[in-house]
Image (cartoon, rainbow, N blue to C red; front, side):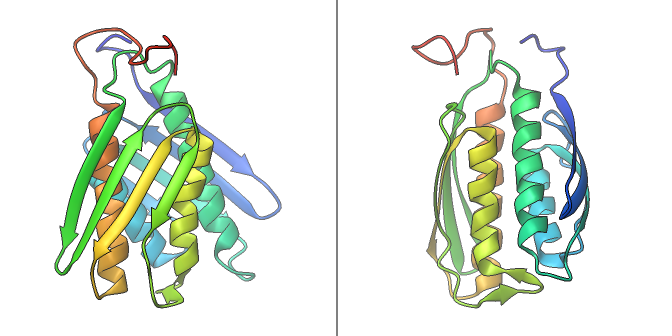
Length: 198
């Protein structure tokens, strides 16, 4: 993949549960316009974009009268699809990334491998059932859905922290920084794998 190749994707997904349009630019400046109807989830995706350096536009009309599950899951699915499309054959990328991110008393670690093998191990250890209007379990499920759809390996652990808002936000920021490292272009055009393909 040459340095001039555009690493962008636009995904549209319309089901009986959600109607989503998402645009992603891997080589942006971290601009985000996220509107899912879930304030805290918007905040997490905005942090993910900002600290990864990706530009993200996401509009989702979901069945929030039922709950937040479909909106969160389908948004993460679309983000995973966009990431896969924008990366193409993954030539000339670093592939691996890891990062720590603190937020006050909370500290999170994220490690990613753009491996083609979907695996997610996520331990946020959130205590409250919800943060704002978003179920805590769905903040974990979003990372799992992103990893599954993008076919990447993700490990995210919150190592300490007393405040759930801080714990979740530190986790998403660490994931953003790890992704930023992994998607970075290198000076060669090789696929970073002994198999010759990812």
